[in-house]
Length: 267
Image 1: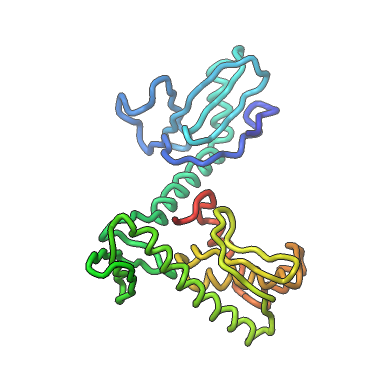
Image 2: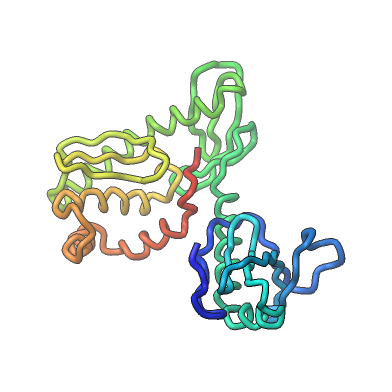
């Protein structure tokens, strides 16, 4: 959390916001949380919690509970509202970012149940449980038919995804090798929870099998990114220049990944 060094000038970078107390019109009585206040910023009502303290400056924080304001005991409410208004654009932008983030989290989450959908190379597959033939998983158009017990659905589907990942990644690595003459000494699947790929100094790379949920061009970007590290083990200008030769549209793909909820991987 960052603090204001001058009234209404510096704000904290916000943590993840899942449920945002943000209203386009004045909320009905009882909608706001107990003890919360409302401020109107650019025509939108924002709920916030106010805490008084012995600190000397006003601080703003956006976290999982929404907008919080910490102010010295001697600062008048009008001064707090002035500070909020001065940074209103920033506050609304951050709240919207976290609301969009929460929506993306909802879109990429998988509900492990018969009839649920799961993204596969960017396209939705419908899960169908068929208990007749245990241990088999097959793709039939937009249906992923999983034969076996319902309580094994997640394990069976993830095992299938890992098998498909080995085939798909191998094919794409071969395509890059044929086209650009670049290939790792060896590669392996990764189940990391915090990164999509990695490159080691010995020339080996690891690729997260969960990439199979993403569109094929995004998978290619991650592969190209790690292959570029075989030449430049950094993110210098030379690295990005080399990456551009492997994947010219890397900027768009990079922004796509940056917009993905980075605190969670599909599981």
